Length: 178
Image (cartoon, rainbow, N blue to C red; front, side, top):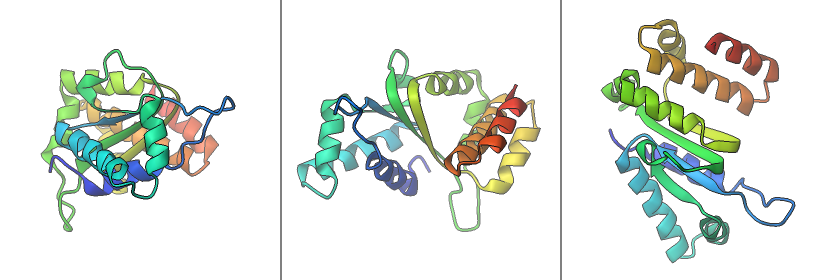
């Protein structure tokens, strides 16, 4: 599964949460996807919303004029954004909870490098859409010989604490990452 429709919808919904700055301009937003197919899916949906003047098209148009970009992780090198929305794409592939084998990509040198680049692009905020089941976080984070998925699981756990406003738990998660 190289695309994840639920994550694409989540990312587009998050765009509606972007507020103008004090100077009445929008921040520069980047959307980073783990796969080229996910990048193309989201870019295509954004184009369709703008062309058909669907709900939210004005904001998406303003964000676009302000530098909204949709990238695959490998294309992020050299890009800097105020807000980064990440679609990890990988996760469960069916109702039985079968996991995609693509998660192992994050344990390769290239995967770890792309993860590092993605995590250093945003200057203000980061949103992370993923489909990794909660029970798997602990399994992934415990196995340090698979560094990429270990980092990924800590990141996802940290992001969820932040999104729920659990500051102490988020700080605790940061300490575990070191």
